[in-house]
Length: 147
Image (cartoon, rainbow, N blue to C red; front, side, top):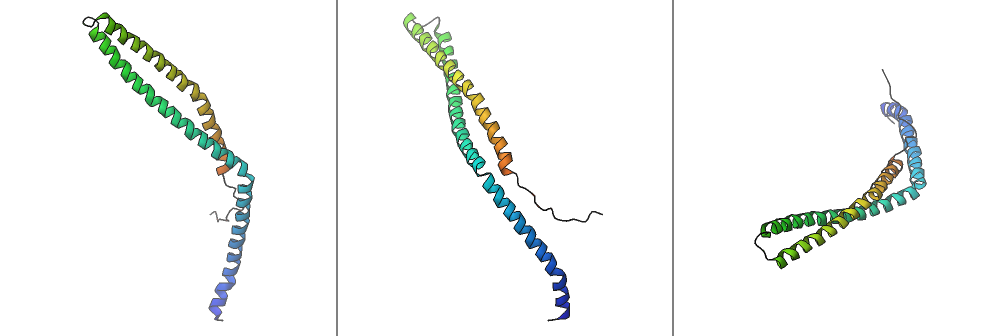
């Protein structure tokens, strides 16, 4: 073997051994951490699914409430416009429809507002689990020269 190559291998071999040991130790620690956090990861996955479902429900309710607001505005304008010109039966029917829509609107607002605390609690819990599950241990820091 060439003497220069021998000299390079003499210095390179210990570095390669340290790098390999570092990778093995950290790989084992990472695997142990994944196994230790398996239950938390399953719970996080379940919470994420529940949050997605609840978010869809809240978005659907929000769209419904927005549509009801538009209908209420239009019906209110119609009632105001026909106050003087419409016959009593038409006017009374429109007022009844308006009142029924107001009741539906209030019920949807209440349903939306009742779901928010549970949604926020699940998001908070999921965020805490994500921090725990997502953090990675640094077992052996790489040596650095600080000048």
